[in-house]
Amino acid sequence: MASVLAMGGAEGAVATYRRTHQQYIGGARKLEALISELIGEEEGINYLSVAARAKDPASFEAKACRVHPADPSRPKYDDPLRQITDLVAARVITYLAEAVDRVCEVIEREFEIVEHTDMGADVKARGGFGYSSRHFLVRLSPARAEQAEYDVLRGLTMEIQVRTAVQHAWAEVEHDIRYKVAIPDERRPEFDRRFLLAAALIELADTEFTAIDTMYRGLAAEEQPTGGDTFSTDTLTTYLTRRYPDAPLARTVNYAWMLDILARLGVDSEERLSDLLRDVDSTAVQAAMNHRFPAGMVRRLDDDLLAAQGGDYLALFGDEERRLGILRSRLKALVRAGLLPE
Image 1 (cartoon, rainbow, N blue to C red):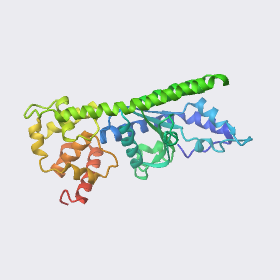
Image 2 (image 1 turned 180 degrees about the vertical axis):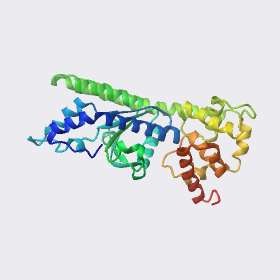
Image 3 (image 1 turned 45 degrees about the horizontal axis):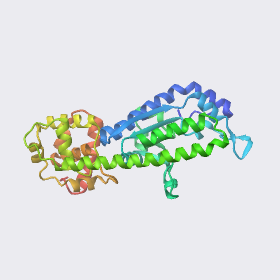
Image 4 (image 1 turned 90 degrees about the vertical axis):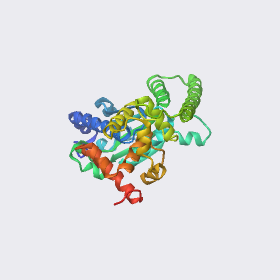
């Protein structure tokens, strides 16, 4: 798809894009599914939403026909289909700021990074408040680009944005006001001031949500073990919060997924799970995985179960090839670290 050349100038590019737009829509679906799998199923990161879209043809036409800012006699884009980098774009929205860092780590690991911009870094460095989001331009990694299911995305530069829910709310309102409403010059200072105030409150909200999460984990850590009580989603969450006090919460669906895995192992209570993990050095396991940021608590348990069971753990997943590939890679990391025999 990305190798299709324009027939000449913006007009040819627009015609080509309109003709192939459905392919880009298919590519967006693939990107959305891939990111959801990577951050949710594989890493257990707690997030609100992942959404990807293909650029609307009318929006592409407007962008492709822009003139060069330094020379109005020339077009801004000589080859719009290659130079416009948001033909397929995704946005990841998380609940907590720490999850933004974890998502970004996954993106940096799983994609070829063309460009990475921290939109809030410069503003914070100047002591101000404003738009805060992480923007990536990426391509598929060479290994993934070889897979037939990703043919539609091969060679394409894509955009991925990552931000918290409150940052997203500010960005959406700010965009709608500044770019869709003609604000008179004399009113701009008033709008600027209110957006600045809102940005400060949003940063405060993100900080307070993190503090609330820390308080919750402190309470959960103080809760007494339930011993032989049968696991439920709630009791497993509490157990994992005690076992991994620094690990971020996972999505509710991830705890249900882990309960199913524990059931396959015949583990249905804290007592049995603690016995299974008795000899596992969880800190050493995570060091072997080489994360820059703390992994989510369900991912932590998944890694510890792999360390406890070794190759036998893989037998639980039958012919789930994608899952088995992930576990084999992690198993190699544990062997390299000397935590499991070769």
